[in-house]
Image (cartoon, rainbow, N blue to C red; front, side, top):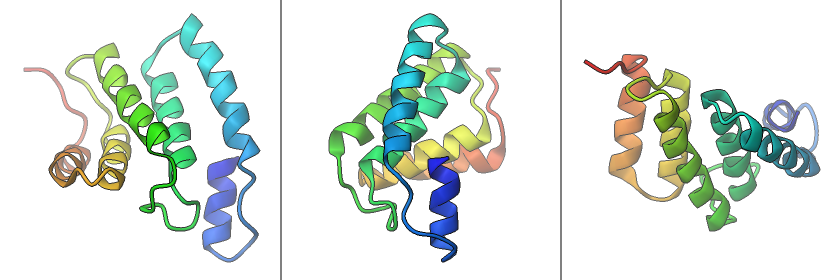
Length: 122
């Protein structure tokens, strides 16, 4: 809901999204990760951490470094779930997180992965 409301706000169709959606999502996803740690859950939690760590309007403006670091850790865990395979949208999300952290080379590599499609082990 937060992402949907954020997109609407960027289009001028509403106010800023309610950050309590992020807090609730984080609690729910944390419970799920302990029971069923899968690629999708890690990626969703990484997205929640990303939005918790950046300014809602200017996404490249860092507001909580711990949340951004946690997002990077979650992306690394997601890659470990299905070694050698990483969906393009996940690579793009990882690139956004790296860009906020001012890790330009990591961001570029992630964006390249997202452009070239899902990565598979040889």
